[in-house]
Length: 245
Image (cartoon, one colour):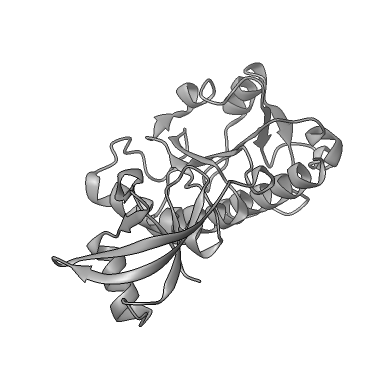
């Protein structure tokens, strides 16, 4: 069944009111029967609802809740990704694939060599990024949406990650033998990742990260593109977090 995130106040009295954007997608794109097909509805609390569509009433599409499922904690990771602002298509790729891989918080930043240095996130771009995250979460059957934080400068970002998390600083200057290891993740409640821009982190930034409690790590002997490095770090961390449970 197709999955749709809605605002929590759209679920009341055993019924769901769908936003017009979701109704149009069901009708025009997915070709669902708006009077009887069933869908999965999520309210970002972790719960999921099996809903039978009841058609439009006063122009609004509604549905009846048939079943409610509690959240499965095994499916949720505390995996935070800090990534450098860069070209639009690369950011969108990172948000989409990072959501599929289990990232719970995205933390964009501007560092010394970042291509995009604008810390102001205009409304239209934020709306597009949120839509990409929502669609990726629906496709990958997540029950919660990742959080998208406002961009920060690099120094501020170093203090944004939870202190109890395993914090990793992916850097091409790290020795190859410092590749991610499963034992780093044993007993970890959360993981924070920092991946630099196209030109990499500077030596000074690596020193600042280390002083802030980040472990310098390598993603292998090859130098990866920044978007590839983001997804590699996320995939490895998600795997090690899940297998360490």
